[in-house]
Length: 267
Ligand code: NAD
Image 1 (cartoon, protein in one colour):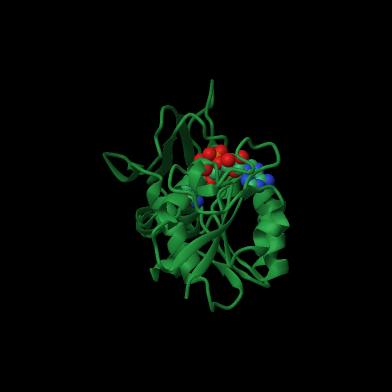
Image 2 (cartoon, rainbow, N blue to C red):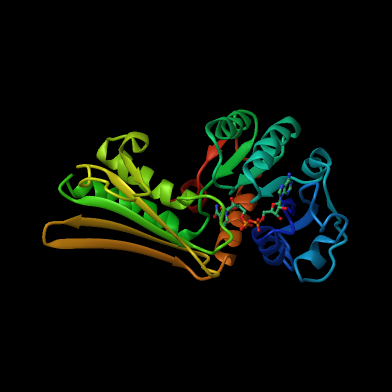
């Protein structure tokens, strides 16, 4: 079976990478592509916009026509667009692979709601390495008691608009889950000035921005006299695109539901 892919935000960094990874494969083909209403890429061929050969698929701004033109939407755009695509994917029985980060609670609810009627794969990070790291962090946080302070440091390129990264938050959630605490009430985000001593049991976050860094995450467990660091470094966005593509190819025939990359990878 050839899975028909819809690339949302086709002229964006991830959108272009997804087109790049999808061309030349026999198990899928790009059949629709979209961009925001103000994008200069509207009307362009999705292949041309991605720097590959033309695909005969024009980038459009009509979200409903875009969703209807495929079996699976791959969405790495902006939170409002992803929430809208979730509603449309559910309406038309199209699978959704959603990678956008920085969604608010209402937008996340729109995704969860869509998963009641269609297949949704949601991940803050589609790389194999980070999905393994999530499990390692959970295991370490369960083994090391609260005498071990947990700090999460991430670095991304200068264009990233949300902080901490969705991946850093997912890593924090994994650690919090293992310790039986709520990340919302225990996280320390952005220290500045006379902060006072570190709160016992807190999970701290620090975000660095600069250059073209595709994504680096370090989870530190720091105790008196020793420190454990678990590190993942992405050197290319292709790893996220490949993971998202694997997720899209995994969706046909699945029952509706909200799935994670660990389901796709069988971890
Ligand atoms: P980007 O800004 O390069 O691309 C986003 C694209 O979406 C832009 O081209 C923009 O014009 C387009 N867009 C805006 N509104 C739209 C709409 N209504 N319909 C269709 N397209 C629309 O950003 P990026 O670096 O590609 O990242 C996009 C998102 O994906 C971010 O939230 C980022 O954090 C996330 N991301 C997730 C992963 C992961 O593995 N989950 C990996 C990389 C990036």
